[in-house]
Image 1 (cartoon, one colour):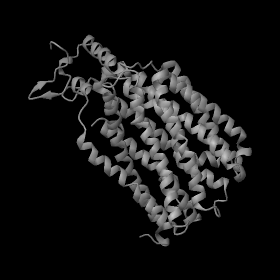
Image 2 (image 1 turned 45 degrees about the horizontal axis):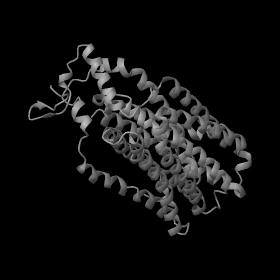
Image 3 (image 1 turned 120 degrees about the horizontal axis):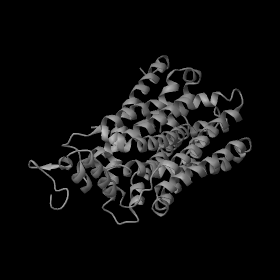
Image 4 (image 1 turned 60 degrees about the vertical axis):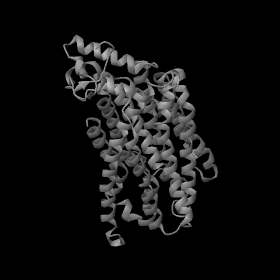
Length: 416
């Protein structure tokens, strides 16, 4: 929603918005809050004269929104990963993706569609009502999560291998998972650097293709919704591909193809960035987005959740996701500067972000193919056994693992 809200603010307040310091922070600040939330929960007046003050207030509250997102992100994904281990082999990655990244992508679509619906209801007038209502509707969905959380139970793997009542051997964890965590986090950083920047600024890009001062908001928001809809085939059709090829190969192939399309799109941008061929622009941009979901969008969460042991999964995933959202923060913050580097040329200003993003895609593909392990269907169980053996070899008492009931440890292995 915030991407469309930024477009409305730019039209409503004009130079006041474009010269405001809040312009640089509003889109990115939620990701700063998300980083705080992921690290924290992974380890455990409105009149024209006061417009600048309102921008700053929006920025502050976006930070707190980010903390809430960060709290839910690792907890929900880790629980989904551990629960997927109880499903039929050959479909586990697919179900994990459908209930995590696919839901995020449907959120992107709704985040583009709701402002269009509100703008249409307001007949493209009363900009104040459009952006405030769009933000307000966004409150409903997190409140539903608050209620649903009361009905969740801990997965079986968590009950067996949790370190809730044990001292976490961070030195051993770093020795065993340090490099793997660095690689997974780096790929997530590069993906979010591109994905969230383009998601937030796609309506701004479209406003530049059209005449932003005269084109109806419904036209800009409508095409923005079309572009965001391309996330859906990427994630929905890509979900079974993760089981077919494996998350590692699916990510590497998807992100490499995304990079190729990005370079082609940057080169052909002068021919695509015309109002009369905006449909072609939307399709090519949509394919670029869709391949991103088929690759890292779907599979980076799988890799972060399944390439470590259950006892440290929340913290491992939280750190990787936080680094990813740090990439989103950096991307949305520097995106305007990358555009500005094009000088007065509208073509160069639009090409540069695609060149930067596509280069990041190629780097992600190399990192994944060379250093990320293959993730099999029983990876969670196998990784728990490998990590348990490593701890025992280094003198750590693994009898501490598992949840406790009535003062006793939950049964971890038969006979113990």
